Length: 379
Ligand SMILES: Cc1ncc(COP(=O)(O)O)c(C=O)c1O
Image (cartoon, rainbow, N blue to C red):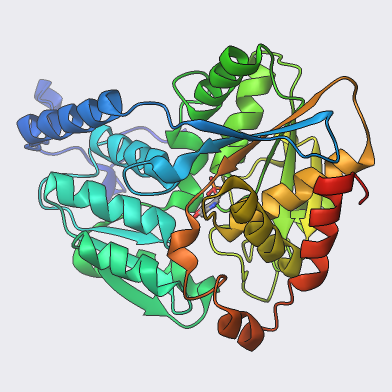
């Protein structure tokens, strides 16, 4: 074993004075007051926000079914990503990565960037969103309205590298929702799973049989799956993966390197790669939902609920109906779903007949099937 300090390796020698017991020292001035103030504001915002409300759908054709939706579109920034954005900021502040002059950069399909732009403005920080060029115009407007800059890229698979590059170039921090979503969320308590299941238990007197949701980062599904395992709850988790996405194949082949070459057409969900925050081990079932069916379900569900919902909510609803059609559980089966965001963000896309025709999305067939199921129970 080489003695240390090694006389032949001057680079490994301790500075002069080490023989006298002197300790070399580095000192950094952390802006502790600013960090404490920023954390206090984030805490106050979380404490002031009421749980997002539930709404229910009981289809006439299947009286044994109850769909329960937690309406995350009622978050201050309009989507379930409000929670993740807050957690990423808290983590960055507590880890000493974010200070008063730190520019923040994120790769996003839009919703997360809207929430992060909102929190960045709250703390007086610069924010840059790296988003695919095809992102809904209403989302781009919302990011800009909160003071964020939008950096649009042609190929959605390049958002990660581009965000990392921009963070380096600006001396900022890449928030990296895809890498960090599962770690910055406390899955044991004070999370969306605890809130949702407690609300369901209070309003229905029981837990749901299934939670059904899509995956973008996979972070929300991972939190749900970890929480129900941690407490050994009799609830199963079904993931609705969309047409152009790597998750389904990645799980089917047990291959973390699975890729999908085409970009997802369902905003917020479906990814070109297996994201690190998606943990296949917590998933009980997966369904692959065609895009026509996701958008059809978005339309049908918006009609039935009397409020517009987004296409990722449609994907999960279609999967829940397919799952429900596969079996009956008397006297009642409860499916818990999230309204991930509002359909008002998609007026110019999924709700526009011209846009649907241009995009080759045909909703008539799957919409009819869904209507028939809801009204007569036949799938
Ligand atoms: C509208 C919408 N729905 C669902 C999701 C999926 O959530 P998660 O990233 O937790 O998997 C996202 C994620 O960006 C989203 O924007």
